[in-house]
Amino acid sequence: MDEDASAAAQALIQAHLGPDRRIRSAQDFRLALVEALKAMRKNPTPATSTVITFGTFDLFHFGHLRLLERAAQHGDRLVVGVSTDELSLMKKGRRPVYSARHRKAIISALACVDEVFDERSLKAKASYLRKYNAATLVMGSDWSGAFDRVAERFGCKPVYLERTPGVSSTHVIEVIEADK
Ligand code: C2G
Image (cartoon, rainbow, N blue to C red; front, side):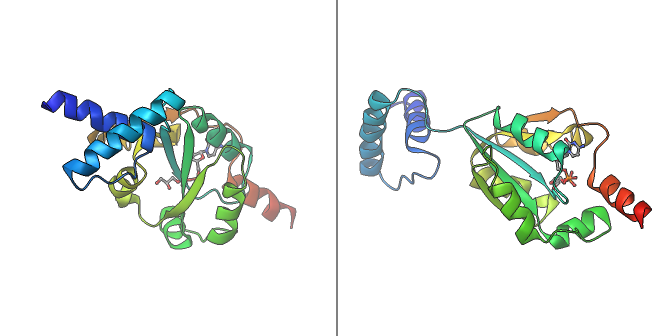
């Protein structure tokens, strides 16, 4: 099988059997190809194209919801890296009001979200894109261009969506404190 055909066959296997299908031998490859063709006959639309996004999502608000719902429209499944309390402290200079456990529970409960994981470092994007085989990385416009290079290195399309004006976790805290 020439290189192009082998690359096409691998793409077919990934598209119909998902990114986690491991091929260890030529025999494996042949079996997976037959299975992928059977799967394709049953359901011509490829299995999944994964969208990935990241955030602290503290004091969950309308801006977060709009970002996640729009992100989900860029693929078949949405995976969200929720920053740990330590990473959030490093990023924002204050501990989140809601713990990582609570923030993850809120995000996982959303209809538009398929999977949630711990974002432990801003520098680990490469490993997260590889692990989830992300086709698209979506962030709010306050991160415009920040992840272009790492995304393109993984054949992942970076998309920056307009931030929702007038709402932020910091603003929520200011309003509450002003009320005291
Ligand atoms: N967001 C938005 N509109 C707002 C507030 C936030 O669209 N009014 C978006 C942000 O642009 C981000 C996401 O919601 O894409 C989560 O925002 P934060 O919780 O503030 O997360 P952030 O600190 O930007 O974390 O690795 C990247 C970081 O983890 C991103």
